[in-house]
Amino acid sequence: MALYSDKVMDHFRNPRNVGVIEDANGIGEVGNAKCGDIMKMYLKIENDVIEDVKFETFGCGSAIASSSMATEMIKGKPVSEAMQLTNKAVAEALDGLPDYKMHCSVLAEEAIKSALDDYEKRRQEEK
Amino acid sequence: MIYADNAATTKMSETAVKAMLEVINDNYGNPSSLYSIGQKAKEALEEARADIAGVIGAKPAEILFTSGGSEADNQAIISAAKTGEAAGKRHIISTKIEHHAVLHTLKKLEKEGFEVTLLEVNGDGLVTPEAVRDAIREDTCLVSVMYANNEIGTIEPIREIGAICREKKVPFHVDAVQAIGHIPVNVEEDNIDMLSSSAHKFHGPKGVGFLYVKKGIRLFNLIEGGAQEKGKRAGTENVPGIVAAAAALKEAVANMDKNAAYLTEKREKLIAGLKEISHSALNGHPVKRLPGNVNFCFEGIEGESLLLLLDDKGIQASSGSACTSGSLDPSHVLLAIGRVHDVAHGSLRLSIAEDITDADVDYIIKSVKEVVEYLRGFSPVWRDLVAGKSQFIL
Ligand SMILES: Cc1ncc(COP(=O)(O)O)c(C=O)c1O
Ligand SMILES: [Zn+2]
Image (tube, rainbow over all chains, first blue to last red; front, top):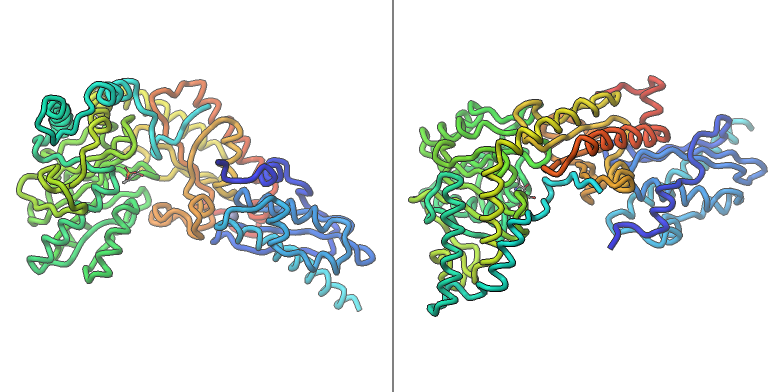
């Protein structure tokens, strides 16, 4: 039995949306090196739609796969919809994660929320 | 495929497989039976015991077969604790870098009221004999120190520690699971009272091990039942496994010098190659280390993803990262030698065996370099380090 599903391994081996958005208007970083997984999300939001998203991750296979899947799930979506993303949905889209790896998918949800918060804060400041 | 995780387990040697099959096919009697095929099995069992005893400088009567290293560690420690308790001694000394078979047994004893001192190690993973001497008290009933560490490969000054224990009249247990069959071990010369070993670490079968117990040291049962192993370990003996273990060990010891020289050369090549990776560091002692052990930390990356990508390249290795263990903390051994969490997560252990070639070594170095570089390429930790937003540790 493999540790991870084929879906997880696919996203781990070929992560989508890897990298940095130089002119991102929402950036979120969660996790810490102490626990072993760190995710950074870059969002480019226009007219309340996530036009582009990129990520950087320091972490295990499921952390990288969760980041990748999460970016795919919110790309092109309205901010209100992206706000609703849950780690459960990310894990399900990956055909499941081992129980003790669920915390890695929580980080993906939190990283996106953190980036959306950052976007919201910047907007408030602009006003 | 390059199997470089021999500290986790080894492939059985052909000699061991052959020995095992012979017993399974032709010598399947129960050693406790009085009829001839039972007695033939008994003979094979006792021959294996004598062979193993001979190899480590013990007497056959001092060898007790177990289900492996964990059981041997448990029985040794619990026996010494019970003996100590009867004499009013409830203090045990061990180290921070022991295997969980030792540490968890000590945890259990702590809950039962024993006091446990876990000695610190230095940056190379060495325990000093002086630290052991200083820690010994009137009520110390056991000192337990591993011969060689399973993660970082550091070989401890067992003989010197043993001499101190003899002088202070404190029983000395040694978890020699990673040492037996790989480096010279002699219970007499090394002043050892109890020693644990496991066959699957020296090309023998899994689920077989032994405990050496010096004559005069009292042993208590973990498993009750029949009178096997002089009443100290119930259960029909795993004769095929035990005979195969003895065959594997004899072979390993007969070739030890040759194997150790070969592996040390390959190990040094691997270490030299991996050192070329920037912001990396060797874990464990540079010289006092197991011939086949290489352990590195690479800053800015996480170990599990490194392992998975190496597996894709046909290289099987291991890591002390939290995410490979299912806990949130990285390896207690790496933390004990002073690696902070941030870098301890990015560790790689390669434990090589005699089948490794120069081409394999070159391929491993090339592959690790590629994967580390790739993972650093999208690591936010690495980005901050390179940008000067955080300080390099390695
Ligand atoms: C140092 C050490 N002690 C004990 C053990 C446990 O041995 P076994 O797997 O035979 O129970 C191991 C193996 O993982 C080990 O490396
Ligand atoms: Zn993880």
